[in-house]
Each structure stands twice: as C-alpha cells, then as structure tokens.
Length: 540
Image 1 (tube, rainbow, N blue to C red):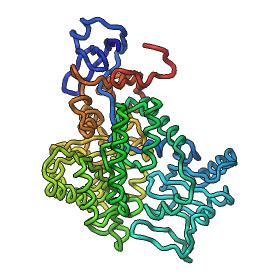
Image 2 (cartoon, helix red, strand yellow; image 1 turned 60 degrees about the vertical axis):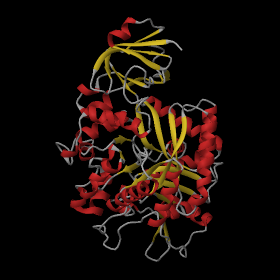
Image 3 (cartoon, rainbow, N blue to C red; image 1 turned 180 degrees about the vertical axis):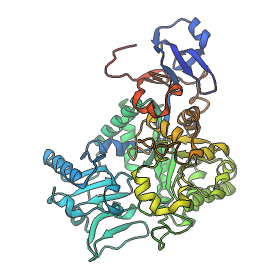
Image 4 (cartoon, rainbow, N blue to C red; image 1 turned 90 degrees about the vertical axis):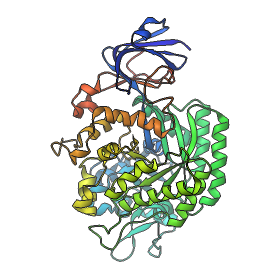
C-alpha cells in the first residue's frame, strides 16, 4: 500500500494537540507534523486549510431500516396526514406489482396523541395492505386491508408487550403500539429478501461513509439479517465497519443463545475487517411518546400507567447473565428512569454473578435519569450512548414528551454534561433512521442544546451543554471505546489505524449553529483506503 501525506490544514488528533500534517503507510498512521512532511510519499492530499480528524463513529443505529425506508413511500418529513396519504397513493401507483406497501418515518406529532386512522390510508390504497412505521420505529400505522390480512379485529386483545389503539366502539383504529402489536401486522407481510437486505445495507453504509463515519453499531440484528451482512461483506459492499448486535427476544432467548454463538462464529470465520458480531441488544422498555418507557412514578398525563417493560425482570437477569458468560457485550435500550434503573440493576447483577472482566456494557438513549442513578454508570463501567439530536425542544419533545412526564422529570433528560463530569464514558449515536445519521448534524445540538430556531436562547438545560472538542470526542474516541478499539482507532497517533475524515473547515472555530449547514465532508478513509470522495471531485 502507498504512503499518503495529508498536509496544509489543521490535524486534530483528539488528544489535545493540533498539528499541520499526517502521513499514512500501509493503512496505519506513520507520523505527525514535521516528521510526516520529511518522509517520501506516493500520494499527497492538500487539505486546503480544512480539518483532518479521526473518523466518526455511530454507537447506535439501524442501517437496514434506513436502507429500506429509502425504497418505500417517502413519508419522512411530511407535515400533514393529507401529504402522507398522497405520497402513499403515488408510491402505490408507481409500484402496481408490490403486494404490500411498506414504509417508515412518518411524524407521529401531526395528529393528537400520535393515533392514526386506518381509514385515512384506505382512501389511497383500499385493496392492498399498507404498513408504515412511525419515525420512532415503536409504532405502526396500517390500513384496513393490512389488519384483515393479519387476522386482526375487535376481538384482538392487547398483550403485556403490545397495545392496539381502538375506536370508541372497540374496533381497531389502525395504530399499533410496541412489539406484539407491530409484529402482528408485519408478520403477515412478505419477508425481506437477502438480496433486498444487501442492497439496503450497501446504500446505508455508503451514506455513512459520505458522513465521515467508518464504524457503526447496528443495534437491532435479527437472525435472518446475518446472511445479508455476510453476503454484503463478501461482495465488498460494506463502506463502513459494522458491529452486529443480535436482538434478544424475551420469549425465545434461550434457543437464541445457540443462534448467537453460531452467527458470531460465521462472522469470525469470514474474517472481514469490516464485519464483527460481538454484541447482544436488549430492549428494556419502550419510548415516552407512546407511554411505553418505564417510569418510577406514573405518567403525568395518565396516572394509570408507568409504561411497558419489555422483559420480566427475572428473565432479563437470567438472559443477560447467559449472554455475558458467552463473552458478548450487552447493549441495552433504556429510556425511562425505571428502565434505566432496571438496566443498571441487571448489569450489577451480572458483574456480581459472573465476576469482573472488561465487559463495557452500553445503555443507549438514557433519556430520563434519576439523580441517584447517575453515579452508578461510572461505578459499574457502563457506557452511556446518547443521541445528541434529541437533546432539544423540538415538536416530539414539546407536543408529546413534556406532557407525558411533567416539568420535574423533563429536567432530568439527556444529562450529557453531568455524565461526562461524573467520569462516564459517553459515546454518541444517531438511532438512524429515527434521526439524522450525520455527526455534523448532532454536534451543534450537543454544544448548544438549542433547536433549529436557536431556541431557547442559551440552550435547554444549559448546564448539560458540552464543548465542541468533548462532542467530537464522543463521536470518535467515545465510540472507539465502546467498540473495544481505543488502542487502534478514535485518536490520531503513530501506529494507529488510519481511519480519517477530512472536513472543509475547522469546526472548532465555527459558530456551532452553522456546522451542519456550512461544513462539508471532503473525504473519508478506513485503514488508509478511501471510502468516500464527493461526486464533484475526481481527485485531490
């Protein structure tokens, strides 16, 4: 492999130093500064006053969902029911051979309580089933034909892990809430093909490479998806490194253990640097917007519920202990304060039963955190994976979350600054396609805690704002630590793997609000191999 020199710009190492040059040989960083300039080079990249830094990572995302969402009705970002229905009609007309119309990303805030009526979709497509996931991917809106195909009607009962919204007369409305209800519809739809999954994964990882990302945590991998990942890797279609997190099912986790072991071994046997399978995902609770996140006290707008735990507590302890004994990393979705406490209790139990080891458990989202549980993260060695784009007062927050939890709990949300100050390892992610996958979009919110209208002035919960270099580190070194790769990636030093991103300007010197709109990724390298080159540039 040739030697590459990057020069004539700011090289941010992530270790507190800035230099002006970096050289790469055989996929690893050879030298920095004057030592880099003094060597011989086969290729020179003129940074033209831009910024070179460790490539970004995403500690929690769903690339297959994002890839498939791009293929279905383009409902994300539409602001009225009429617009969504018209887009579904357009897509159905353009794809007359599709037996099912399946898509995702509609905004649940545009109707009261996020409850959508099947009859609205019936107007567009009465004779074929339509199933749309909400932007949160915990809720589904479908038409009457989809419910008929799935065998659902007024006699269908709610379950401990699923709720069917109903009309006043008891008939199903068409909004399905959480696992069992959502799955009841989707189980009737044709399964995604391996080839379709390969296409979705290729498109999603290419989008990540264009965003300057070289490692992602797929935080929801089903057994059938592994074949597609293996095939994509064999064809060289993964434009980023991907670590798979197999989803543990509360109903069948015991039989899944053998699947986890076999799938991990299949990935290891392939031996592709861009694919690993070291993690298992546990959904501990749901989300606040549909009152399924687990809370210590009842919801402010519904005193009859504290949420919907996904696992019986004893089963969670047993399953987590078994997965940990296999040497797999735990990655737990926990939103509500009770859900987070349950996750921490379960991790503490595993540590006590299985003994000490470098396990690096991850709790993702960490939305409403009880004050007494904050110190437990550092004490237990738990990584807090947060989505900085959520730490702002956008419509989901003001229309759904604030009324659900009330003002006191609202002040305990996304405590990024507090977690960092308490010594917790913090990594950033996007939960894409739930929110924007680009780190350049998340950086401004982490630093300002302001929304797109730059409100509230000074930031929502301003004490939880963090500095731009802390935010960069959460996307780089923080994610590398989550990946057990801090010795290899996440900062720039001689001997480390050359995972790099080139920006057209130094984001540390910009007004944070301007970063997403004015900064461009000019190149991404994974182990010295260029994975992204802007379409309008033929070389450097």
